[in-house]
Each structure stands twice: as C-alpha cells, then as structure tokens.
Length: 86
Image (cartoon, rainbow, N blue to C red):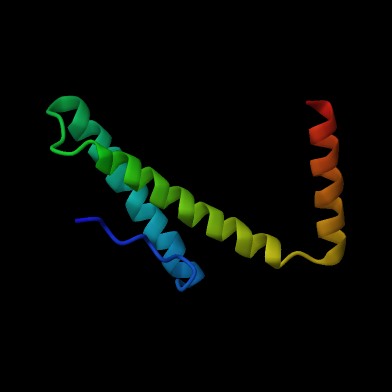
C-alpha cells in the first residue's frame, strides 16, 4: 500500500520547522540503523529524503513570496549572473 504524500502547503511555518527537525533526526537514525543491521525496506530512506526536500522547497517558496520587488529584482540579477558563469 502506498504512503500518502506529505501535504506541506497546508502546514504553518512553525509546523514546517518542527516537522523538518524531526524528519532530519529520523533520517539520521534510519541511516545509522541501516548501516548497522539493515532495514526491512531501504526505500524508506529515499522517501524520507524526499519529504525533507518537499518541506525545504515549501519553506523557500514562502520566503521568496515575502520578498519586496527590489529584493526580487536583485535575486533575478544574481541568478542571471550565475547562469552566465556556467
């Protein structure tokens, strides 16, 4: 049975921070357990990493949505400069 995807859009900022802290601790413990004795389903590590990435993405999107137009303009210039350097 497939697990339900984590719905981060409905979480508050405080929920996101507390959730990411607990997930990172769980990931660290899961990696340790996997190295020592192995896991029944090692794909759980991948799902946990993806949930952490989903939360980080949502947190960054909320941060960027709060930018002023001047900050957005500066961000666009920085991104353009980085892409030219590649």
